[in-house]
Length: 419
Image (cartoon, rainbow, N blue to C red; front, top):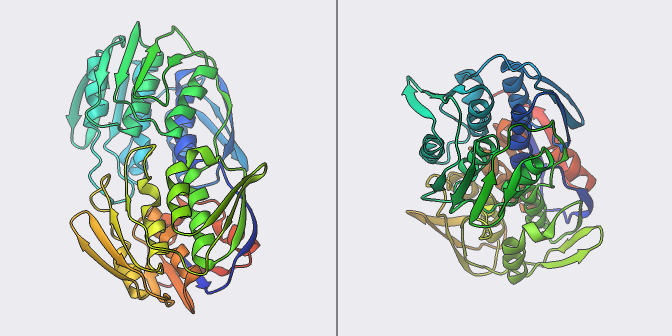
């Protein structure tokens, strides 16, 4: 197992190029199941989750080949409809094979998903929507067994705007007979990117990015040739890094329109953010100002940036209140930030952060993907050495981050961890 050692307190400066979005790449990779033939997907980041999804596709009979930035998937011979526990347990996005397998083969057996331990995140809305489309669903010893002689369009209302639920239903509806209307759909850019990818395959989708999406099913789809959007969470992470180090970073290849809520809050906190033709130039203040946030579904403040924003607020002038409304266990990074000298109190889903003048380096433990990123943000802004253990969480969502940080002047080193 690896660890990351950071000698913090340096003002970071330079350029960084954002990788493709993991949370867009994974469902788009899965959408290749809906067609027969070879699909090519560009700007796919080299991450553990991408490789896990590749293994899962291989297991289903799809040939998967990856070279830097490009995934090639041949789905001409899908011969298995089982997504086993060993592959699904580490990555929640594996449940996305449910809709496409059901639509193409008429059956699917998918282990209940795992991933970061940040909350229950049930898939009941996925199953409800598929049942409305004519699927028979049974739960059997930790697996979802689904079958359908032919999916049919239906009106589906989601009790909450679930991202993976919307994506699963979008893919299934693309090959269903008739029209499917999804109400209270998730609006995230990654959902829109999947809809655009499906449309490039011949799907008929309208309303992606709005609360009502309409899908007119077609008889067949063609293989996929598509380029994934840039990662807005990686973009936001480097913005907070500029903020906590008082640095100046040109973030290239990003999409500022996908991060408007975050940009607004960071500007209020004192960061200078300029939109340029090449991307965003972010300059950190001598010390940020405390600001309150409340995580919300898109276009609200993203839960995937809550931990990184908290690290920034840990050294802000004043007191900030951070309300987490999406995942009930997403404050696990707080104990580690406290080890670095942060003054944070938690009551229910609310964290009160009293800014301190500086953080100090310490040995800390990553508990989930975004917590890992928050500890990097904190470590870069702290005085002294910070060692982040259990780095595998980070490798699920950030491509070559230590190389990118070194390019900005950070003193970081990946090492083998004896723990």
